[in-house]
Image 1: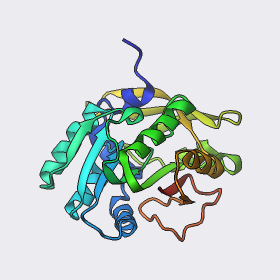
Image 2: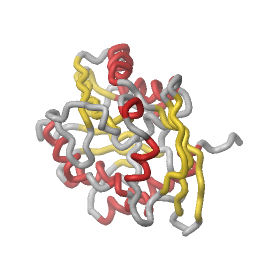
Image 3: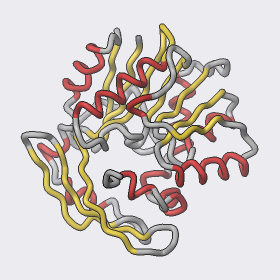
Length: 255
């Protein structure tokens, strides 16, 4: 059995804590934006990649969209199914690897928010496999909306300072971080308490992307229009120009 990757270990028993993290609190505003991108067309079939505990999928299902949620973590999916049951919505949650999804031309829109797998993979090829797999799942005129870590940010700001400023009581704590300019990867150590109350430390490795890299990757997958914006938590907007102070970017690609 190969050793678990850090993101697999993290999400094994972290679903309740995850729902309390500061970065998961923008769901309503993000779904308002998504609905506008969907032109409020409730006949659309939407795929949520790296759906986690189901927060976007559930909110959109409540608003009348047909949702399928995929995630690698059984622990996160269990919580997602409980959350969906509490919200009285029916969502097809499936345990899947985003690099190799079983769908071809089935969805009108794919969403992948809050590092839903993408940026977390240990090689660039694996990250690209996620983009390719998501693209294959889309219909001919499909739309892909996702967030990625903004490569402009670490050139102008301290990633370490940012992580420290984002910490909330009881949430995860960044212990140290080092950014590699050659690979655009941030290697960090994170301390957190899992749902069983056990204190854990993990070594993480996340890939930041330049807007031009994302554009090139998506062009190579056949997207005709690719727009990149700043991604403000809970306040996604096409009016939000990407700057070096944005930790994340919002990408909207249309086939």
